Length: 215
Image 1 (tube, rainbow, N blue to C red):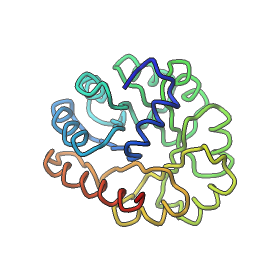
Image 2 (cartoon, rainbow, N blue to C red):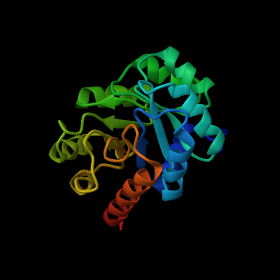
Image 3 (cartoon, helix red, strand yellow):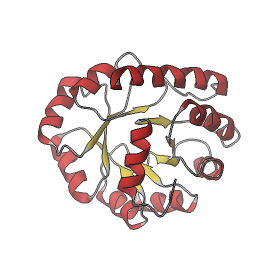
């Protein structure tokens, strides 16, 4: 990934390749290289390590050194200080479960891709107005495909909508038809202690399912 590119272009390129975000909650720095390799070799181009994982900044640093071409950063980013810490670790991606204007502003100031979490039209429009590059629709278990369709009807066509929470290879189709642009994948892809070979199998299942949607 070219760090000189503007964040929207970086995100657009990664999404064009494969709009699936690998959410590695619980990843340890020791596991990071092998799990990262399993994902990248499967076609993933966007990886987040939630900050409530063990030593997440160490994992982010290791992954960014190994895979400079991949969009890598943190999830569960809740304040501006954490944005700075992720940036210092080499991360170029900030994902949050909520919309905090200070988090978005700090990410923009550091030329990072920022995807805040929203669940309502009010939050969605506020996040986009603040400069968010895309929207994490969270929790997707609460936001049915019909809800996503309603949001898609009123939000700008350029706004990337990415359901997160309970996404599996089997339920992506309904969200995709409703207007989702991509997905964040959690425990169905990676869970603490899962072996890299198992992650690779899960990754392949998600990639196959998505390619079936996108034709």
